[in-house]
Amino acid sequence: MDGNGRWAQARGLPRLAGHRQGVEAICRIVRAAPGLAISDLSLYAFSSDNWRRPPEECAGILAMIAEFATEDAPELVAQGVRLSFVGRRDRLPRMVAAAMLGAEVATVTGRRMHLRVAVDYSSRESLLEAAHARPRTCEDIDRSLACPSVDLLVRTGGEQRLSDFLLWECAYAELVFVSKLWPDFAAADLASAVAEFQARSRRFGAVPAWLLRLGLLQPLRACPEEADIVSVRIVEMGMLPAPRHLGGRLGEFCAALHQPLAERREVRRLKVQPHAAGLQRLAALKEMDGDRSRASTFMP
Image (tube, rainbow, N blue to C red):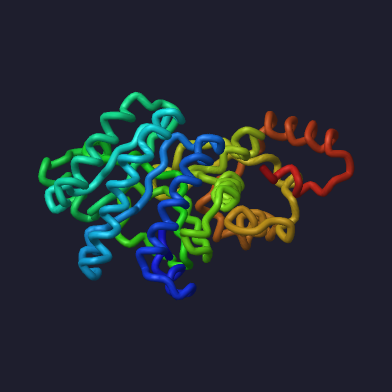
């Protein structure tokens, strides 16, 4: 939620006026998120580094957080939203910590969405605390952290960095950076970010699922003499699209297959075998697609 101060300064207002508008943006996004099938929403309200700001600004931000926790809890309950706060509480004013705890208790039964607000939060400190328990697996660390793994991270204000927010949890997150300042961020902007996320291909290091579904690629055992070799079974080479139709690694692979056999040393990391089932599926798809380019059958 970046850009509150800049929003205010651009209008000749005190920085706290920008933070006040930032709270209004929180309310808009919380109302819109469940309708976009978002079940977990985490917001970065106040970082551990923010203590370096002027004391008046820090006190004002924390007072707004306490006000949000107190006054908006009934609406969150009505919406079925559970509110939790993550981060340190030992450095917060007692009134703020008490308001946060009261909101957590009041909304604990919410099941429609879990809203987590980070206050006095540092991801590196969270990881350091998790390491003290001597975790043996990644799952051990996952269980010790307050937030689940992140699918989509959106940062407003034009900045393109994580700034010590959910570093572990964002290991496989899709990142969307928008230039709009947080007070101007609307439900339509969140919907646009979700649409961009849904349009991306998330493979987590594996072969694209759509190739497997079509039967064009099926995993085989890697060559024992070279553990890093990836072996795949692919349809008959004559059915491959021309390399000019494809980009990325698949395009490079197809380009290499179109070379004379004596020049294919660079594809030794891939084994090629005819695959009858894949060939039949591809033929059926071509019949359905009519005279469309053969490359279209390789698209998800």
